[in-house]
Length: 138
Image 1 (tube, rainbow, N blue to C red):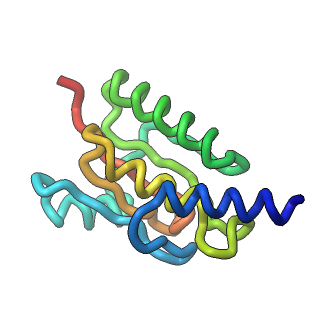
Image 2: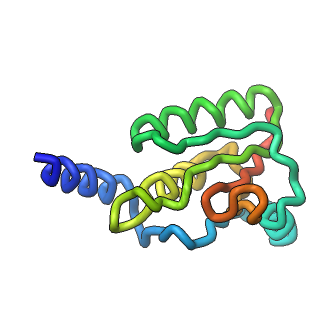
């Protein structure tokens, strides 16, 4: 029964995601066209201070999705420019790929209020966390 549940969860996860999956050691990075590559490099070096943080450890995919959406909405509403999201490296995740890391990557890419994101530098969570630049509220 547990094996069947795991297989079903992996199937649902694969349907949620399109394209190649990130592995635990992969760097997450993304920027909208209007954001310069220099800003993305600075973000990756940790030169932007995260004003708020969300830790998704021990969340399942559904909980993580809900928490992440609420967190980002609240951060944008509060006028916060940079946040850190801890998703973990997926060491206790599916053998196929780290579930939360891939979920965070895909969700951030879909949001209009996300300008750029990059895996955090080592002292700020490394590849188990991501720094996110948010669009200023208008």
